Image 1 (cartoon, rainbow, N blue to C red):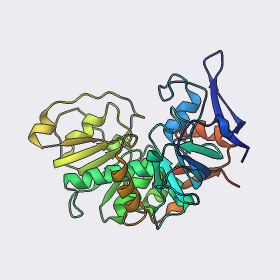
Image 2 (cartoon, rainbow, N blue to C red):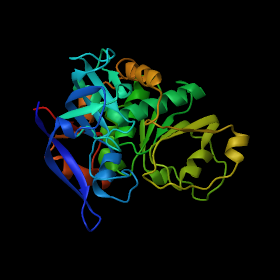
Image 3 (cartoon, rainbow, N blue to C red):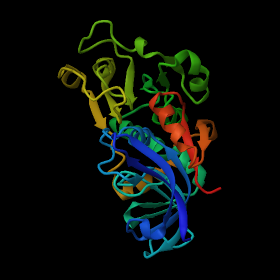
Image 4 (cartoon, rainbow, N blue to C red):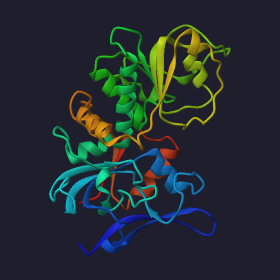
Length: 334
C-alpha cells in the first residue's frame, strides 16, 4: 500500500467546510501501533455536523479525515494485542475528531482504541450498528442498571427513526420490553417503526404537556433520549416512580428547565451517555452483547442507503435535514 483514498475536510476562506476525496500516502497518517485496511464505516450526526458546519465545535482544527466509525482488517501491527489479519472495530476516542478517521481506505490508530470483532458480527454488521448502535446499547445498559423491568410501563424512545432511536427500539424489543417510539414522522414511518419492534408510535405533540408542571401522569418507566432540548422536563414529569432517562444527544437543543420535584418525589434519574470516553474493558463487553443478546434481528433493514467515499457528501445534508431513517453505511473497500 503506497497511496490510498480518503475523504478530506478543510475550511475555505469563507469559513465553509469543503470536502473532497483525496489521495494520501501512509506517511500522511498520524502515529499509532495498528494500521487497518478499512472495509466499512457509517455516517453519524456528529460526522454530518463536522462536514457541514465549521463552527459546530465537533472539530477543533481542520483539515482532517472525517469518520468516527470503522471496521476492517489489521495489515500492520507493532503490538501482540492485535496481530496482522485480525478483524477489528474502532469507534469513538479521537477518531475523526482530532485523529484521521474512518472515511479512508487505510487508518493508523493507537492500540488502546481497537476492539477485536466479536463472534456473531460481520464487519458490515458492526458498522450498521456503529457509534449510533453502541450509544443505544449503552443507554439500554444504563436503564437496566437502574432496574428496567419487562412487566412494567413501556420505555419511550425519542428520535425513533434516527440511528440511535432505531437501534434502541430493536434492542429493547429483543430483550422483551414494551416500546413506545416517538417520531415527528409518525404517519410516514409508523409501519417501519412497528416492524422493527415498537409496540406503539406517537408524535412528540402527544408527549408534550399542555401546561408545564413538575409531575404528571406516569406514562413510561424510562426514556431513551438522543434528542434533548427544552421539552425534556415534560418527559421527566411523566416518568414512573424510580424511572430514568438515558440522555445521549442534543439535536433538539442543549437547555431545558426543571424543578427538583421529579427527582426528590419520584426518585427520577438522568444517565448521561458518553460513548467517546468509555473504558476499553466495558467497551469490549458491550460489543460482545451487541453480537449476542442485544444484536438487532433486522440489521439489514436498518440501512437507509449505502454509499461510497465519493457519494458521502450527499449523505451529510440528508442527516442534518432529518431525511433518513436508520443508518447510512459506507463501503470503503470495493
